[in-house]
Structure formats: C-alpha cells, structure tokens
Image (cartoon, rainbow, N blue to C red; front, side, top):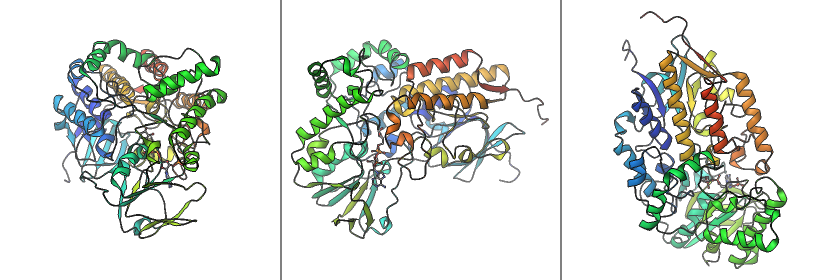
Length: 543
Ligand code: NA7
C-alpha cells in the first residue's frame, strides 16, 4: 500500500445499527460520501447480537420504529405489541435494502484506531482489515448497550459445558433440552429469557445478585385495526414522542403525584397499569422518580404482586427488590417471569448473601454449595454507554486519547461532542437522554442534528467544529445536577457505571427529558451552534 493515497470520505461512521443506518441515509441525501464500518456481518446492531431466547424490545413496536420515512412507517407491518428480536432484525434488513444502504457499509470490520490529524483537519481511521482511510467527520454510532460484559468469575474459562452471553448469542439454534442450565444475572435479558429456558431445561438455576422490578408486558398480536389506528395518528404520536414525552414514548402525561390520591384510588391506578402492562407503569404519577415516599407506593405495589404470584414465600421474598427505588434501575417488563419460579425445575439462588466463589468444571460454587450445571447463560449486561467507544483507540488534539479524557467519567457537550476531539460526533452519547428514552426517537434527533450541522459547516466553508471547554463543563454539571435531583443515583445501576468494577460512578444519561433536551439542542443550533467552536482552516495547504 505504500505510496498509495488513502481513500477519503466526508464521513466515517462506526456501527450499522439503527443509528449508523439512518446517519448514512441522511448523509447520502445531502450528497456526502460516507463509509460505515460494522463488526457484525449484518445490520441491526443490538438486534443483531442479542438473539437470546425471548429477546424483544420493551418499547412497543409501533413506536420503536423509524419515523423519517412516511412510506416506511405506513407500509411496515409489526406483528406484535412488542416486536421479537428476529422481527426487529428483519425490519433493520428491510430498511437497509429499501434505502440501498449496503453498498456503503463494510461488514466484518472493526474500527480500531482513529487519529485526528491537526495539520490536515482530518480523521485517520484504521480498521481491522489493515486499511486506513481519511475522513473529515468521524461519527460513533456504536450503541449504548453493545459491549457485552463478561463477569470476572474465577474458573469461568475452565468450565466444561457451553457458556453463552445474552448480548453475544450464537446465530445457530441453541437447545437446552434435557440440560441443567445456570443463568447468572437477573436484569432485563435474564427476565426475558428465564421463562423460555425454564421450559426447555431439565433444571434451571438462576443466580441473583440484585432483585429487579418487573411489570407484565401483556404482549399480544397486533390486529390490523390496531395498526391502522396507530398509523392514522402517527403525526400526532410522533410529535408527542419527540417534543413532549420525557422518554420519547407516547403515553398519557401524569398530572399529579402519587400522594395526591388516596390509598384506594392509587391502588386502582396501579392495578389498571399492571393489567394493561408495559413501561408506562412508571408514568402513572409525575413524582415516582423524584420522591421516595411516592416511589415507595409503586414499589410496594409491585412487591405485593410478586408475593401474590410466587408460591414459595422465601423465593418471593428474595425476588422482591429491596435496595433501590423502583425505576432507578431500568425497569423490566416480562412475560411470566415471576411465575416461572413456581416451576418444580427452577431454583433461585441468592448470590448477594452467598456470592459465587468460582466456577468449577461442572458447577457454580458458592460458599454454601456447588450447583451442578451443564450450560451457563451469562445475562450479566453491558459496559453501557461508554464501553464500545472505549474499545476504539481515539486520539484527538495534541495526541490526547478519549479514554484518558474520560478516565474519571465521560465528558461531553450535549452528549454529542467532547472538547479536544474536533469533528467527532457521538450518537446518543453520554450526556444525552439516550438509554432513558425510546432509542429510535433519540437516534433520529441526533442524526438529524448532526446532519444539519455538517451541512451548515459545508455551506459556510468551515473545516472544524468542537465543543468549547466551558460549554462542556457547564453541560456536565447540568447533567449531574438534574440526575441528583432524582432518585436514580441511589441505585447501583449501569446508568451509573456501577456494574463494571472500577468504572467511575457518574450518572451518564441526561435525565431532563427528550422534549426539553431536543429544545436545548435546537436552540444551540439556532444560535449558530452556541458553545461549539467552528473554524475554517486558516491556510489551505497546497496540494
Ligand atoms: P443488566 O440490566 O445490566 O443486568 C445484568 C445482571 O447481571 C444484573 O442482575 C447484575 O446484577 C448481574 N451481574 C452482572 N455482573 C455480575 C457478576 N459478576 N456476578 C453476578 N451477577 C452479575 O443487563 P441486561 O442485559 O439484562 O439488560 C440491559 C438492558 O438491555 C436493559 O436494561 C434493557 O434496557 C435492555 P447487579 O444488578 O449488577 O447486582
């Protein structure tokens, strides 16, 4: 390759999930050249990797879908209230074909290193196939829950049976029939997969460190009438999700707090939400995330439900979360999770009071006893929000690495850029609503904002853009302040980085709500990208 000039693009995008695909589409519409690198051999990101049994989105399918194309949203038929992973992946593939995205996506290729060349104002991007390309803009569409976290448990490597991570599930069929299976972790992935694995396995042992709140999903097939009713109201629904809803989901907005109702009325409201199912359980009142006493009413309601469902009182007690406010860890929604523990072949093991000491060749060993298993499912989650960014060796101005800059926690302005790293955008990065929202709503907002910004720069002959240090400092302080006005930081959650040993405890997403956040981003743009420094190269280099 020596002597050959590097290929150059206007934009290099990392990741071909929902963010990367829409980013590519927007850039091409603007007549820009873009190259997307994707480590998987297909599109879909999180929905490409998370193929575990029972994987489905907990945002309803009619809302967990792109809104940028009217034809697409009118023509695509979602089959169920919550789309199962294979259907979401099919949708992602449909989008890739419909908008002819594949020619600009290079699959099976990781971006390993990116260095900002200060003389040329270009990013030099090195990929796992040994190539290096140049790009004016570098966009990380790497996803927030994409870097599967293996637990650091002694002996795991020596286990003789099969080991699966929910976030990195094999593409071929996995059969647990007749096997003794151990599931480690009780987050959303476990809560979705445990009821299904229990039906297949001869014996299922679930190792729980922290009990989680979960609400029935009440999944069902969508009728054509339901789909049509949604479609005909799409303009209103999408606008609400973008501009008004706090989490990007169309739902009734609560007008009162939990303690404004009497006991009976409150109970009736919780009961109604429990019966209708889904994430909107938390939006029955407007202060559940803010006031402990209000939160307790919802938490107690769910704890009572668990006690009603689970027959063995000791197991029920263990399944009742008791050390974090409801919602402060991402609330789960399930189909028969708690009921599964009534099955004779399912056992719950409390590894909080009795931690796993090691994994032997054929068992999970706690201080109390060995639990023999033939296969292990690690439902241990992700190094969320920053994990996939950190895997890329990114060098900004003065050779500073992003990992060094973020060593004490991510620092961004608006969750979009980090000072010292010109022309580097993060889609749904830390400091934006991201994982606290319907991801597709947040993805579309960021992609549109970034695409508009790039076109603004092109129109004005500007070469670089970066976050100003003071704007970034203020934003980081604001993100923190808003978070600490809520109950969220009380939980050892992945929002806080608390699930990764050694990761700094910082509340990473912006909790101010997607509507207000969008307004802030729009205002910043309207004021000529206030808080960002934009410049034209003073001297254009001679060829
Ligand atoms: P989560 O929600 O991070 O859950 C991971 C679970 O694994 C959780 O119960 C953890 O307990 C447990 N865990 C993690 N590491 C260990 C070790 N080392 N030992 C024992 N138990 C461990 O990941 P999910 O994949 O379920 O869901 C992620 C998101 O995807 C979800 O919120 C939805 O938005 C979709 P802990 O709570 O840390 O004590």
